[in-house]
Image 1: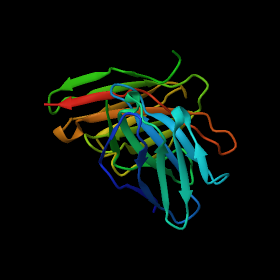
Image 2: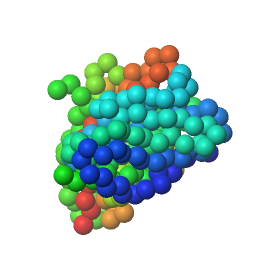
Image 3: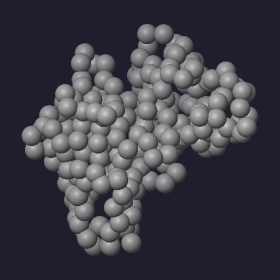
Length: 113
Length: 115
């Protein structure tokens, strides 16, 4: 069975400082991994997707994530946080069918001025 | 905006009543998914359609839940005899499958409150 574990339920950073949101995955085969963001009253938006082409994946809004098979991790980073980054972030793994997504419990990111 | 549209945005109902939600996917998308999200949790898969065929249903989808996509376009999700535990955000997503590279587009959801 596939699963993801987000290690922090809440992360707080100051504007302009780096962001690190941690995710570990469990999969019996090479997974497809995603990060989604959810702003209040808005739909889930895809930030980035890993599908084995490259271990470092660049996404929208300056976010990137690195796939580390030896650590079964897929952490999300951004060099400098903006106030607009405040939202809920979900680490996601898909099953072999592609569109059936398995979400982590989410990490709420707060950005202080 | 031609994204995924869900109606209503909010629904408040009394326990035991039936409710129906509607999802209009992006027009050329052949797959449509329903997810449920409870407070403080990530979304959970409920069911999905490829065109008009319902291909998979989660064990979360009890007999009180039924979903349809009659013409392979919009979809409805009905909950009969609602219970307080059904209170959640119901999310719809659609995609166009092509060569295994599938990207889901989510709607803003329908927030259900069962009193």
